[in-house]
Length: 283
Image (cartoon, rainbow, N blue to C red; front, side, top):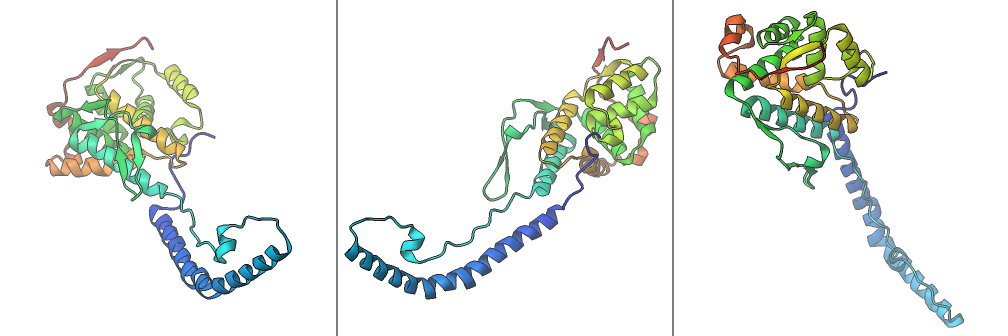
């Protein structure tokens, strides 16, 4: 059936409400039920247990061990294990890395699960920046345009950027390119793959229109996207990167005085980064 396009479960706010409800329930039960029992009833139970043990000691030399609860007569307090708020964690990770890529222009290209620490207070620790990539200003701005186009499903803009950047394929099919750029930077959900696995999907695109020249400026940005998608899929929370990064990219373009609507051919040429063209043997 393929990978779901995006998470469709309880929201971060709903899970946070559930967590608060569980904490409140534990507090009420511990205070008014267990606490009341331990203060008012446990001493009586302990007294009777002591008398019963003394009676047994007079009639038998057999020793027995008792639990702490049995010895004190108290009930253990309720401590419900509350799962982490996965949607909130995913939202934080996606926005952090989108900001690194599109605003800072300096990002960790290898954000796998081992590079994050979930701290006791709910914060996320980011470690191991061994695969860090710095974008030029024009690369960063071009990435912003690309992710807004992905969010808006602007196939024409993506194709215009591709042809101006030196993308070449056997038939120059814009529909095949659109699938490639979605898969590489945004989502591998079944809306893109049609339910095929990765190998089937890539073989299908290669058969339809093999490419043989393409710039590699954003290879590590794609790798970061793939890593995050794999991580969130493992957390049962599949994502579409453009739903997080498109908003960040559009805000950054507006801050720079370069709103998305202003990106015609002349502006794309003005801000085109220095290209690193790679050739392949797909053709």
